[in-house]
Length: 265
Image 1 (tube, helix red, strand yellow):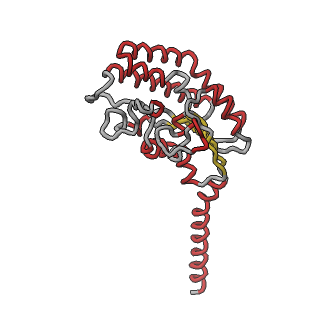
Image 2 (tube, rainbow, N blue to C red):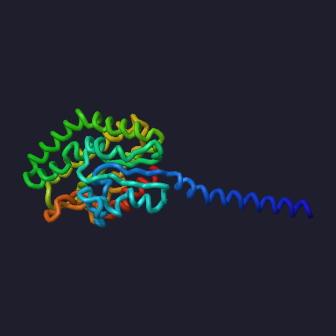
Image 3 (cartoon, rainbow, N blue to C red):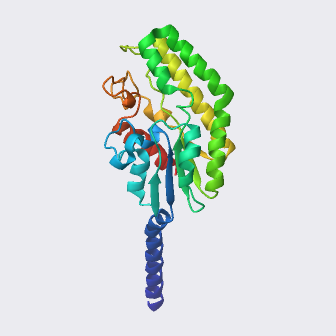
């Protein structure tokens, strides 16, 4: 009887120890994370509202996916230097300095401004299908010839300054749901814009893999929430505030970007 009691007691102690270690592991893991968010308006949260006043024209939002991840996981340190309008060059010149040898997690979206997303959408809206298609074709040619090199310089800079960090490179959502009735741009223009975004994302994925970075693709999760859908997470053209056009609502950050970031980390 005594041996049975001792055995039972030992079993209970082991179970309690395992449980305590299991519960402590996430907290300890989060406490060890030093997170820096880099990138453009999709990382700063343009379109999501609730902008941090000190971020100025960078428009960093409290509803952006990096902030949502930090809120949920309480890392040891967190800073976002993501900025609206950022290109690969401005990330190198103005954002990489936020990284340290102790940085353990980095996230980034970049590349869209290098191929001229904003100018393309303005052309497509104001100048019609012919100019829209031509504008996207030009951007796609530029992307094929130079985007991988530009991204590579950013990624090499990240790895140099944060050699031990896990780096998550997030994609852009494809803007339009096709095959449905939709006012505004023609079906040809919408399909062409989608093709351009897919090319940028595919080049980004290939380049990120070359550096051993994690590519976190948001395209699938945005399906059914694109422009021309019944439950869109992406803002349509807004003449009153052009800058927020074609960016995710807060719902796109929380329902699209954040779950993909969480899964990647």
